[in-house]
Amino acid sequence: MRHMVKERTSDSSHRFPEGNFSHLVRTFRESNNWTEARLAMLAGMTAADIQAIEAGTRKPTPTEIEDISRAFHLVVPK
Image (cartoon, rainbow, N blue to C red; front, side, top):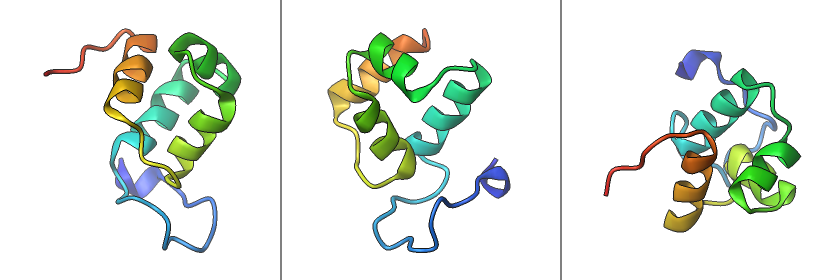
């Protein structure tokens, strides 16, 4: 999956490692044909939060990981 992900910008200094949660969020969101706004609504967040997490410019909190996972009907192991 790593090779399928393209960087949004050429500056990767503020990104978290490729292949992590941010890339999974985008992959799941796009596979569901959801906008960032739709996922944000389902997760109780803002579209700006989702965009920043997907871009890798902001690390999600543990609660946000749970909320996003729940929106996709996924279970996060404790």
